[in-house]
Structure formats: C-alpha cells, structure tokens
Length: 427
Image (tube, rainbow, N blue to C red; front, side, top):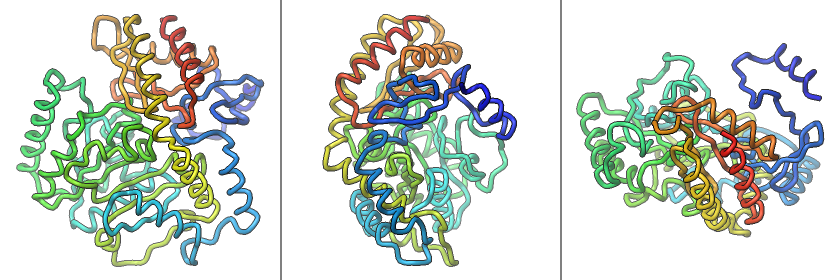
C-alpha cells in the first residue's frame, strides 16, 4: 500500500532523508504503546518517533488539552503575553535545578542547542566549543559543526571552532581498558592538556547519554569532574537533555544529575518528549547568561499556545503518574532480560543503558568490528515480529536503540523482549 507513496516521497523529498526498512512503513495512527501502519498491521512501539512520543500515543490528557487550546487560539508569537508559555516556563525552570533560571522555548532540539551555542559564545565572547566524540546535537549549520559523529556531520564548515574531548563512550577508545575511576582521571587529564593548547573556550556541550551515538555513556561523575576543570577557567557547561530529560533514564529526572556533584549545568537544552509529539524544545540558563544578548530577538513558533498546552498536560501526567519511577522499574527488568538474551547471541557486543533508554551494540562475533548489516537485519526481523526499534551508533550504525514510551507495562516489556530475542537469534 505504501508503494505509490514511496515513489512520491522519492520524487519530491531529499535523497538524504533516511527511511527505515527495505519496504518503508507508513504509520497511520497509534494508541498507548502501539501504532498501526497503512496495511492495518499493529506494532509495539519501542522507539516513539525517536524518543518523542514519550508518554503514550493518543494520550487523552494531551489530546484533550491540544483540542481545547486549538478551539481558543493556536498561535500568537512571543510578541504577546502567553499564559501557557509562562506556566510551562515556571515549571521547567523549577525542575531544571538551575538557580535564577530563565527559559526560552524553541520548536526542536536542534534549535535549542543552536540557541545555547549563541548564548554561550556571546556570554564568553569566544567561538570555541568543546564537544564530545561520538556526539550528536542537531542538523542546523552550527550544531552539525559540533557533532562528533561523521555519519551525521555532512560538512566541516562551521561558524565555530570545535575541539573534541574523550569520555562519551565507555567501552571503546584509548581508555576503554581502564576501570571507571582511572577512566575518569584519564579523561580529565586529556581535557586539561587540551585546554593548555588553545584559547579559552566558550563552553563544553555534552549529552549525558549519547543518543544518536548508540545510547553510550561515561561513568557517573565524569562531567562533574570536567566541571571542576572548566569552572576554574570560566568555561560554561551545556547539558544536552534532548533525549535524556524528563525521567527517561529512571534513576534521574535529568541526565546531568548522574554528574551533579559540582552542581547543575550553566545551560540545559530540552525537546523531544516534553511535547509528546508536539514541536517543543527549549533552553534553560542562569539569568545572566540568558539575558546577555544585546539585540532584539523573538520566536515566531517557539512557545506557541497549542504546543505549550500539550507540554503542560504531558508534564503534569508524567509527574502525577511517576513515569520516572516506571522507567526505572520496567526499564531495569527489560535491561536485565536483554542482557540474559545477549549472553546467548555471539553477535551482541554490549547491552547498555539506563531506565527506558537501552542500546544493544552488534559486532562481528569474536571481534570489536561493527556490524551494520546485522543491525539492519535485526531491525527488519523485529518489525516482522511486530516491534519497532531504532538504530544508531558512531561505529557504522551498529547499535539498536530501544526507547519505549515511559508508560510501558511489564507485560509489554516482556513481549518486546521476546520479539527482540527471536530477531537477535535469527542472526
């Protein structure tokens, strides 16, 4: 049924706009943790529109809030007072952990990170940025320029000078053989050495768990240790919470809290899940940083009433139903089950993750060599079994990405694990 639509897609959209599956899927509707395609097939959704349908498909509380707001006014821009925007900003500022916080809303994570880079470079009067190897921060000109994953960085041209730091990937690279404490110490030593050879940077931007990079993460406390070094030099810390925010990792509400021994970040970016599918992103920063711009600025679509209504309803539901706790409990069960399965599958190099943010890295058996063909095969086999998952990874797209809506039940986690077991064993 999608054949005609696929031809039309290819005729009018860019060649570089990737589609999953040999026979691409048209999703027509969803409910809870499930979606249906144009042929009527039902799938358990373990990817949620790239971690964006964070709570549930067609969540009544969110759809009702959107419909009611649409019946009043959809949009007015930031040139007018906007009650839903102020209300959501108040809640996000409080939850962020950043003192004297100000919030600016955007339409995406890319735009949020772009804004954070503008603020940091203006505040510090430096266009130099520290970023992590294997990172991904968006597809705008500035965010592509700080992305440390060549598969997602189509140009080396950039308005920024970017220097890449060790530490985002625990089990690969020159420090992989070290224990956690020595790994952190080696990464800190590398950072200090790097800073000794360059002009003072504006900021370090880092994902607490690298999303597109395959759900990799450093040991807890790495960015806190970095913070000590950075703070001595006045360098800001931007925590990219586009994928890790809102309780997805289970143990923490924000990813930075696993590295919070030296306080919160100076800037925090968010997007994806807060709108439960609506286009919401934003930046939280200390007032002195947020207010450093000396020219006018607005956002036509950032903070528009209909997206703010969705964000408020979704955040309320998430907090009232302790979805962070559910991510911790159900995610812990799912992670344990997947590790048990992986122990019997030679193609699995590593199962890693936290809460409902789990990565399965595949390699050619007996080696560390990435196996993107195996990842593609498992993606197809999972779909055939009725499960949608994602893939990524800085090593030739060889990691499976599992990130279900945070309302996932134990029974659904077991069902998904069964399908994944069959898909992995099919290798």
